[in-house]
Length: 263
Image (cartoon, rainbow, N blue to C red; front, side, top):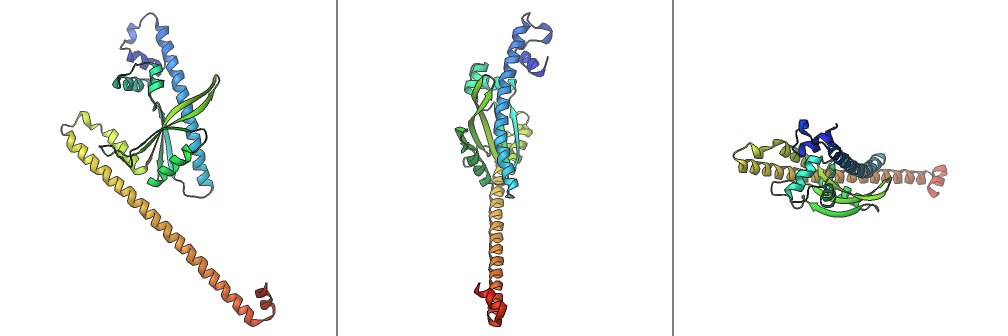
């Protein structure tokens, strides 16, 4: 018995020692869930491949790579059923596939805020990627301070019985945004802290500080890039001036140098 089967049995609130006689039906359902989750896992692989190709291209061209790293996950059966229950939806595989668009999730971590929109644009501009929905929590942060760009996309995946367009949620955020979101999630403060409002206010302040730092870092990068361009232009200008002086000296000297100048 694997973890998926055990999880399904746990969801039925049946002790392992008191399983019904028709255990085949239970295990059959577990196998169906495994098959469904496999398809979402394949969809993740397709999206990650697209993003990894973009990342490799930037690295090969010696450009600054806007993608720091990529992670992914498929929701567990327990998480899927809990979400369906919270939303008052039927707790079935059919309901999950029709109503949940984040069973497959990919997270892209970028260096700077504008990288987020660049990567999102390069992804959704691809011919086989269908944009279903966008939630921009960077321009419109959640009340608790959470920031990230969420894209719901559909992508074709080819199986033995044909092509299916699978939904995948892509979250794109900066390193700083991911740092805050990960720690906020790990704190699990809502169930144990009596003064939740104070904690929420402090977390919101931290999120705002991190957002400000993101913008300052982006401006600093732009300023450094501007100075690099000015240095390169200055170097080119100085080199051209030196070349013109050498040609002028050759003209005055006559002979071979004069021939070079005329060419």
